[in-house]
Amino acid sequence: MAFTKRGFPDFRAAVMARALACLAACVALQIASPAAAQVERFDNFRMRKAVPTQLKQVAPDLYFLYDDISSNSAFLVTDEGVLVIDTRQHPAHGRDLIERIRAVTDKPIKWAINTHAHGDHFLGNPAFKAIGTTIIAHRDTVAGMLKNEDLEVRRRMAFFKSMKLDPAEAKMVLPDLTFDSKLTIKLGNRVVEIMYLGPGQNPGDTLVYFPHARALYVGGPFANHNWSNMSFTPSIDGWIALLKKIADMDNGDIYLPGHGDVGKRDDVLLEARLLTDVQSEVKAALAAGMSKDEMVAKLRFPQYANLRNYDRINVFIEALYHLYTTGKPLFPYP
Ligand SMILES: [Zn+2]
Image (cartoon, rainbow, N blue to C red; front, side, top):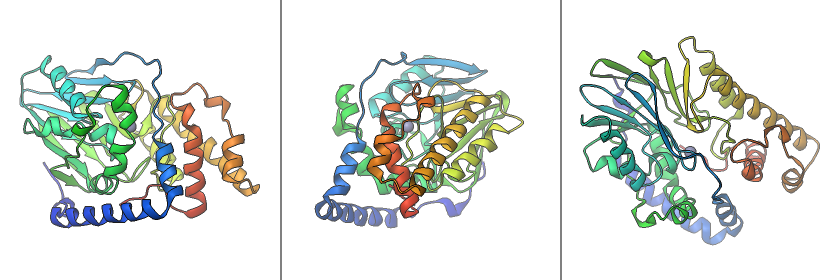
């Protein structure tokens, strides 16, 4: 196993930074009510008819949990143990994932990876911590978890309520190990390549490649036939370039998304096309002098109206307006 020592976070500094961030956030909330309103609006989860959650074996020893109502996970089973990608949205869902793994193998669950700093992919960490799993994330992902912990829990309250999940259980457990650019894990007879090629949807977006399966797990940047949240990306161009890069990998056949079903190269390119089209329409509207409210009222993107999360496009248009008018994402980190 190789990892860079530079990637280890200084947890004392992190705790201090967290306390200061909390203090800053509280002050900001008190003095800037428009920002608070924006955050509340962001929390707009609505129940809808979803595909039932299903576990799929996508290659030898590689399983994909397609959870349409929440978020996806994957796990690799070997003689030496199990490696999990993304721990789901709540400790109860983390425990459900552990039960599903236990139906396949009784080997120890040694590793879990948090692909990005959104709570729907890491709030199951406590369930894995409780059984001794070592949790890994990119250092920018840890920075995002620390900075946005409050937001990540708060914007999921409607989901917890609708799913009858105890919000008090939704506590952040930080990763044990961080990396900067690449981490290779050998587990049993398999190799797992954990990579960072730069930000896509988020700083820290982690890709996990399984050479034996020619399968790439793309947590944040790829949501198959979904609209992705655009509030965290530092660059839509960078995100598009990342998607094109992974679509052009000559050793990728299976693309496992953070949301949506198992994908292929064309599905990855569809997301790149969506981002290109949305970016160019928003930029054209800005150049034409349209206000944020006018954009929200007028931009509709009918060609992508059948994709999941289309009902949230107003939030995404606002996020892009913020990005292009300030040069910064709505929720910046690290
Ligand atoms: Zn997600």
